[in-house]
Image 1: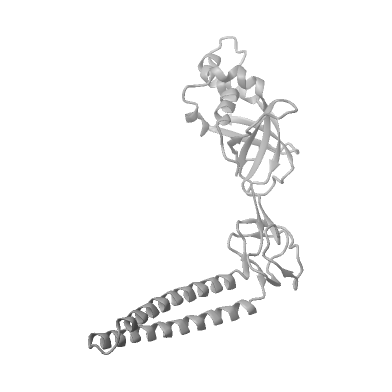
Image 2 (image 1 turned 180 degrees about the vertical axis):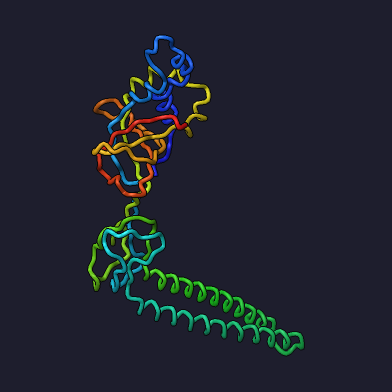
Length: 288
């Protein structure tokens, strides 16, 4: 999602500064115009953009054994998508579990040895050095067990990572590798991608000159107005979508070609009529 920035207030000031004089316009005796009419004249050419996109990649090395999705289908966040062969990682878990067992026994032996050495030392039958050595051995055994437990946790995490899940909900592309391929966990390796199409973003541009001309006419509490603005989308077929969107962000710089400012609106797309790249008509109204 594109974060908002200070330009957003300026943008809305320019586009909707008419609100500061709404009452006067609506009361015009000659009927030359109304606030609603002025809003209707604000039309933009927009283009649909992806709402969100995520890559699917592996965090461990392995042989791709299963593909659990069909390209183009809708997947839910957390849904298993791919499986790497888990054999080696299961063996690593077993080895780590065995090491934890061994280190646990060593710790128990160190505890018993310290108790025995301390008892003998109290009776004067062993040296202080021997008691100190037993204490050091106990501390070392404790640290070794902690390290073994951490290694077991890592091994279990790696085993779990052989099942690769969807990071977001959306429509999934085809997989870039065939079953049987050995894939390494390297930065930049993409197995597939997921595209979120509900909601989508719609971008359009507004001339910056009008921003400057109308900036001074903004209402004092423009922020209170933002929630009441609706972005309406009309398809190339002329069909107007039922669900309006909302303004979410503006660009950080003017477009070099025409000194306009890019605006983004977030628009619901439950029927996926809005496909990325689709040109649409955009207008903005005040919700009733």
